[in-house]
Length: 120
Image (tube, rainbow, N blue to C red; front, side, top):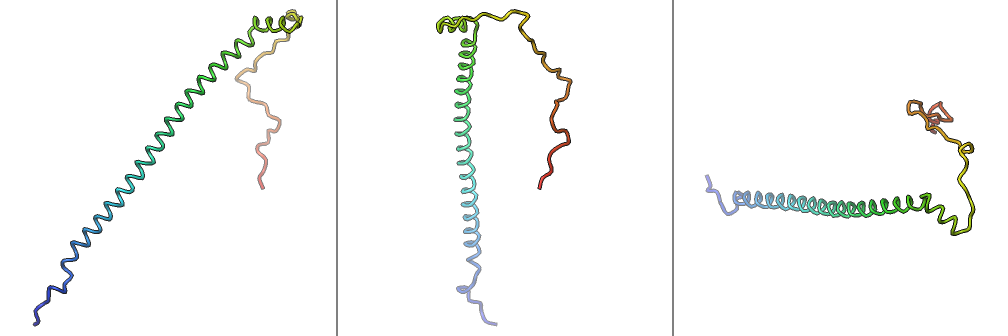
């Protein structure tokens, strides 16, 4: 039987193939990790920006509510009417119509009670 020529054998290439495959797998996993890390950082920056925007908007809402409360106060209305030369007085008690709030136990009354309209 002829002696086998080891120079032409494939035995030495297996380790190299497994090494390349493992290196490729590590590179793919590193890429996935970096992509997830980048997207998490981006989302974190967006959340922080939105939280600061929310705090700023809350300050503006509180400020506008305070301004509106001051603007519709009785003293301010009387001052504005005097400044513009408007002579008005408050209505008498018998001329005031008071509305009662709807009881929360009553269901809402809708014009159409058949349900939703059929779709085409």
